[in-house]
Length: 313
Image (cartoon, rainbow, N blue to C red; front, side, top):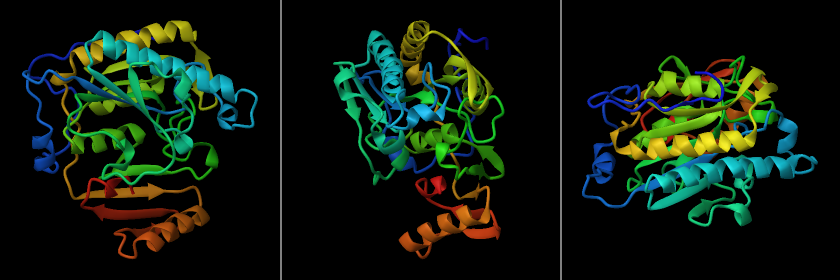
């Protein structure tokens, strides 16, 4: 895909829109989320992260003390509202935006599209922590401002959960290395919901299509030279692209297939050093002495998980 073009291949009848791993997870939850053409509601859940939006290529702008922080938030809101506009243009009856950035406070409530609802603030606690506020009544999930997984050479601000903290993690599901896109897709798939669009850098879009299939709508808003430097498109252009992508994605949302992970699953997480791994394990053991993971070397933990919540590990 060339930068500045939106991948909007229409799903073809009978073809899965994503790579489906295994069989259904928790069939009861999926059955509860079954949708029919008679259902006149069309609800869309938009998840926003802070590394992948238009115009952003540096972690400095993520610090509230940094002079560029207000501009970063404005850029993020531009992408979010463009996605909302696209959803509404496709006939969405309800659009919920979830601020999944650090501490959930990078969106600006005053600037949210008046037809959207916003979830913000710290903390999880949902049965599906990565998508708190979503349920099976939604038609699909859109990821805006997403980034590539840790270790992606051309991924702008590429990481898996840790970002600027330095406690970089790498994840594997059944031996396949994955990033946050796969984790969101697994959480959504647990409820029978598909990821219908991903917007971020070129590497992010590539990772999403490799996981979920080429029928997935992707919008590349920048091209990474390395994790900290990028070729940026003008936000005024990318907002038009995001809106068009969201409209296309919602129009064909009901044809898209959830990404489902067959349980139990072997999850592995690796840290850059023993100290970070020690801290991570200690925190989990304190919360749950029966946490089903073990150390396989100084930097790596691995466990067989039986719950769609625990696979986030």
